[in-house]
Image (cartoon, rainbow, N blue to C red; front, side):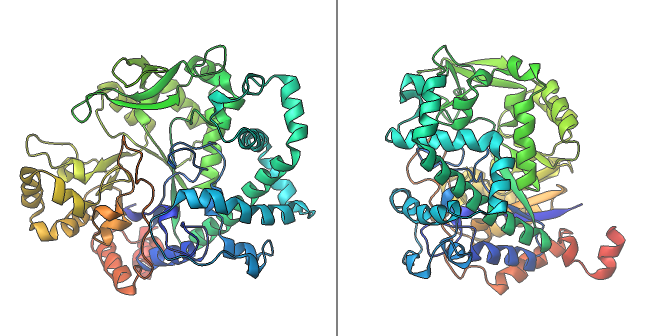
Amino acid sequence: MRASGILMPIFSLPGDYGIGTLGQEAYRFVDFLAEAGQTYWQMLPIGPTGYGDSPYQSFSAFAGNPYFIDPAFLVRDGWLSAAELPKAKRIGHIQYAALYHQRPKLLAKAAARLNQTDSADYKAFCKHAAYWLEDYALFMAIKEENGQVGLSSWPEALRLREPAAMAAARKRLASRCDYFKAVQYLVSYQWDALKAYANEKGVKIIGDIPIYVSPDSSDLWAHPELFQTDRHNNPDRVAGCPPDAFSDDGQLWGNPLYDWPVHEKDGFAWWCRRMKHATHIYDVVRIDHFRGFESYYSIPAGSENARKGKWCKGPDHKFIEALHKALPDAGIIAEDLGFMTPDVQLLLADSGYPGMKVLQFAFDSRESSNYLPHTYPRRCVVYTGTHDNTTTRDWQKNASAEDVAYACEYLGCTRRGLTKAMIRAALSSVADTAVIPMADWLELGAEARINTPSTTAYNWQWRMQAGCLTSELAARIHRQAQLYGRLAPAQKPAAEAKAAK
């Protein structure tokens, strides 16, 4: 079925509390998507963010981001009083330092009240999530106790999970563990309500999971045996990308690498559980860096850059077979951007998962590209750009004159109309699914860029201004979706919807 959606991070929603939340503005965005005839809301990972504020470096592969808890909804549900609401703030770029210092104080009040109740729903949540929640809560409590230093700088007895040290920590930090559990319940409660509302409106959620976990995460701490670690449980090889035309040093991500033979012994149980969790909270899951399952770039820990890395064989088809067995009906998108070897192409084809196409990558005036729309297979998801690209308006400003001229010639447009033309090219393409970043629909410039890879400053901070989601814009998007056969089923005329069944 042909469909379309909009890419919009939760943190980029407008609102009064310094960052986008799961509150009223999220519901308003769902309403906008439905009005615009869209099938999908694609967002970035929703886990708690660590150093650098990147959603791709989370303290847990399973937990939710406490910053996304909406304070006004806490008042509505009785966990805060109206007098405790923070003062409304003018919308601007996200200031994570302020959130770090202020938001936990607010959440502590709500968490304390929740922990004083005898809520059956809360107890059920803790029981169901115990397989990750217990370790996550203790991890965060220990991290807090040690001044928020990274896992590698913890006292050795705790880093190595020595039984006596762990027992003492559980007793000493019991109340703080209760706080972190309660906060996760509040995230989950608000998330489940939003997702249910979206689904009722005919909107499906596309979530995003990083292939790797953070080196400062409860995942590595709780299961060091699943990663390539030394006898001190520190990573001895880390992830990244090799040098290329864009970077002489490559990209040093620093994430611990999986010990794939260990995963294979139990049928990739940890990954299957992770994917079951992801497919529960999302309708469709985009797996970042899909090619890492076929082969991955391995860099010695402690390296200054990625030059000394090497390619190693991944779990390949055995991993995909395990996912198919555990999740036969899962909706999965494979992020297959970058150089694709024949082996990676074969793995993607055998998986049956749609790959990705990005129009900003299509227009290299020096050579033809398989990102050009006339080369697409039906089974793919096309974007004008992703969270790692600048906006299309800014792309045309900074790309070479030759590339922009090539794009205008291919799309049959002027420079002034390039953003609209690129959106039309995505929607009119043969790709089953087209996803357009919200910033491109708004024709925003560099101020709306979400992330610049290989940099740490000024990322993950963009917020949409209030009042952007107009009925006029919804009507224009709806017409485009209708024109190119991508209207959500609920938005189709009755006869057309009946015929599509």
